[in-house]
Length: 88
Image (cartoon, rainbow, N blue to C red; front, side, top):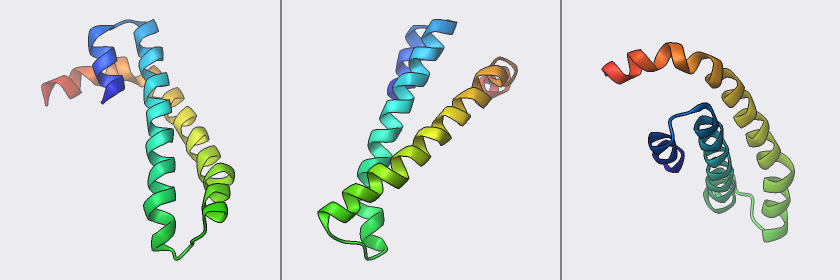
């Protein structure tokens, strides 16, 4: 939501890249927190050090790479698709 709010006010290539960065950071924070506080507990993994290490060494790098791929795929096709999205 913060990225969409920023891009709504700054519709340009620079605004898009800044919005991507805002979304990137927000998604990493939310996914890391949810993995730490909820998801790992559902799998029965406990202990602060164990969960913190898993988030830093497994989930955070995975989500960072995933976000980069999503950004690199979204940017070139957005112009073609946004007309259809606005119709909905």
